[in-house]
Amino acid sequence: MRLYHLGGTFLFLALCAAITTAQSVKIAKAYADSSGTLHVTTSNGQDIRIPKEKGQKGAEEIKITEDHQTVGWLVVYPNPDSNRDWEKLYGELVLWRDGKVTRRFSTEQVFWSWDFWEDGKQVRFHTGPLHGAGRFELHDIASGRLLAAVDEEATQTLPDWAESLDH
Image (cartoon, rainbow, N blue to C red):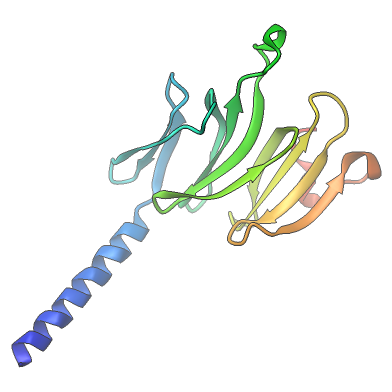
């Protein structure tokens, strides 16, 4: 009976060690290949391919948090106007952590810029039409909850979290 208990304890400790090791793997780099598929390379050399979204042309504006645990990117979709097919349309912001997509942010228009905020706990972005005034948003990454928003036309002074985004 004691041997059985000892075996269970050993199995539990081995499982805890495996989970801790998996969580401690950091993102070394992330890039999009020539087909637009995103790759995440971990610190132990593993290359993880992230499947493309339906209709996705590419992935750009790829950023990694300072703790190297989360990567984010803008999904590039083709412009439906064939006369403007050279123009990139960023239609979704995707965040990936711990081996899976953890959060997606969409817009009815396009993303102009984005970045992590507050040590990677929040994400901020600027969306809007291809030409004209847009909207700045700040979200909690864990919940996806909107923390703050500013319409560009409604203010002359941007809050700190929005100030350095392209506009």
